[in-house]
Amino acid sequence: MRLSQYFLPVLRENPKEAQIASHRLMLRAGMVQQSSAGIYSWLPLGLKVLEKIEQIVREEQNRSGALEIKMPTIQPAELWQESGRYDDYGREMLRITDRHDRDMLYGPTNEEQVTDICRSHLRSYKSLPLNLYHIQWKFRDEVRPRFGVMRGREFLMKDAYSFDVSKEAARIAYNKMFVAYLKTFERMGLTAIPMEADTGPIGGDMSHEFIILADTGESGVFFDKEWENTTLVTDISYQDDLEPIVERFTSLYAKTDEMHDPATCSVADADLLTRRGVEVGHIFYFGTKYSAKMGAAVSGPDGKDIDVHMGSYGIGVSRLVGALIEASHDERGIIWPASVSPFDAAIVNLKAGHAKTDPVCEMLYEKLTQAGNDILLDDSSESPGAKLASMDLIGLPWQIIVGPRGIDAGHVELKNRRTGETVELSPESALNHLLEQFG
Ligand code: ATP
Ligand code: MG
Image (cartoon, rainbow, N blue to C red; front, side, top):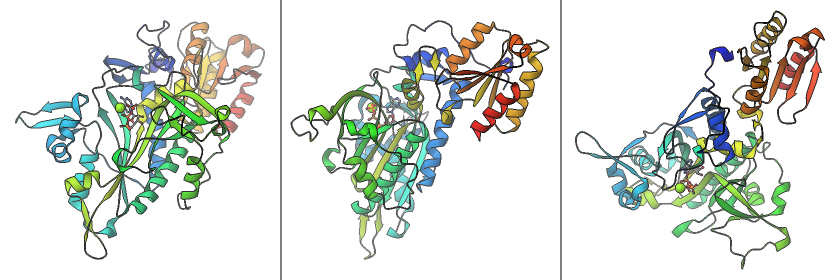
């Protein structure tokens, strides 16, 4: 992509309304624009990141065996009256009336909708297990939308729903999602700690919030300092018996302040860390809560009806864009992990239109692009200082900086955004270095 043909409305000044780094940087980098409180338009750069995150989430859901569907954003009130949540949900629910005076709502979540699909089509235990997910916009009329996309009113969520014949079977589905979440966040360069959450009247230990540490997080969290040494999970296969793996992770203490009780905490004070965190995912087994009320049952091997056991599994896809920035930025801007970066690298032509820099930039752009990489070429007429500031701001992992004086001396600069390390290399070496990095 050539910057001259792109839409990247960067802001030089810090927007006054933004209280935390991610919100400030997303506005400054031209990723989003506020439409009304907690509702945003996603501009090209922001949308690219959102879609990369969405894709990682999708791939890991698919690998775990969940099937993608797409449910509507607008739901009929009847479904929620059946479950009893139409009145309970309160003012967070955006209620709508259509032209026939039918009560509708903009979905804050989809348990009722998916239970309706289940009861319409599932007849026998032989159709289970089943896990259906979608990645869809939600609306919750939050009391205090704030921190940009971190607590929006309209936000993108991945929500999966599992259907099983028993609690034991549901546990297998739960474990799959548990591992899928560890892998998903790890692929984004994040350590998300699964923390025990409230299961309400169902009880048991099948509810976890996945929380990444950030000083600006809304949740207070307590966890064993051993969490800082946890090993990676990429090598785990979904075909393995996941129970021991989940146990390995859940045996380490980690709770939000709502669940933490100093009186019963098993970890010595010296080993207990207290931090703040952002909830990026939540997995939850709720048994037959909806299936019993809404009549979603299958016939068992003995011919008797079994209310379907369900779980739901959410990931805050749009919240993750902000959470990733909270976890990875410096005073100059965003530092994207390669897996979610909007472009793989930038080529900065410090003097666009110059007889010496233009051909080098074109050569680099063409070779890198042809090799399948997504490259942003800054061919704009901004000043060199402004260009370099913008590139640091938008945070691509690599920059190749091409200036007339460097070319005279036979080199370009290759800059690693995360370490700040800059090396002078011939254009060919810089090219080869990046091609090697990108594999
Ligand atoms: P919170 O406690 O932050 O309000 P929640 O418990 O209401 O979250 P869930 O209903 O479990 O959230 O939704 C699943 C995921 O959706 C959350 O883990 C979070 O990442 C994301 N999410 C929830 N509310 C918002 C919001 N207002 N803006 C952006 N993302 C959200
Ligand atoms: Mg909430």
